[in-house]
Length: 381
Image 1: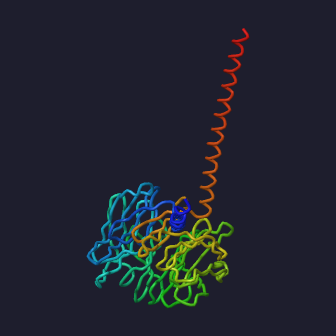
Image 2 (image 1 turned 45 degrees about the vertical axis):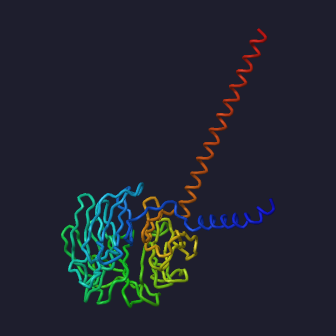
Image 3 (image 1 turned 180 degrees about the vertical axis):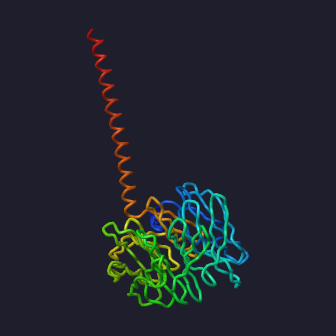
């Protein structure tokens, strides 16, 4: 017996450690597998039970797709095939049936029409000319308007009316647009970052001749901007990133409020409705959640089994869960608030089950007592 334990115990300990490590490697509650041979760049919910994801082919010979899939079973709905030789790295949902996507050349040929408007009901696509040679950023302004940023000799931001397909330009200068965000409580205001500029500009989309304000605090080009509703103020929460550092802004006074960092380059960020900031690191397998004071609250891990597949984007579902896009997979996560709610609901269900079991036991016991009394009565009479 001792000899058996001598050989078996190290093996059992190794298996236990591997099982614990495997459980720690992925905090998602669900994984949706993607298409083989395609890399997913971005996904966003569209409608009640669908999400749209753009897929980039791993080689120049692969076509580019955007797919509409169901959230509950990952079943394919509609597929939009984009022109060969163009990659789509960005998309944004306009309403329950419409999304727009950018198009960047892969083969060196610059497309004249470099973003598309797509309808999932009738599976139609129409291409429009963005600013300059390529479109880098897209943001929804209203249910009929989209703001498009790109690389242009002038007016690097265009506001498109999707009903008329007519653009109007922002007086931005020649620098390429690196980030765009709309303010959630004002459908007229846009924030932008530009290549080589350390300031964020706040624009009135109806009066785009010059910016309303400038936010100063970064030391390098701003690569990401996001905004969410402030539950305690009319001024929304605004966050931005450059390389390895991020700023939470006091928009009312146009000054930095707090800073945050993950110790490496941040690929993108999203300000969530439940007052968290979500960001991912370059070539990373973690989603970092900060509160609006810059404190790291939680790290959500993705599967490390294939180190070549990494997270590229995070977005938010209508139920406040996180939709994380990775190369080859899409994962669903709960934020700490939603996880607590889910745990509470599970505990409540468990308590109800225990109560029902207890009631059944009591009823069964009462029934036994009644039968016993009946037997005694029969013996007496």
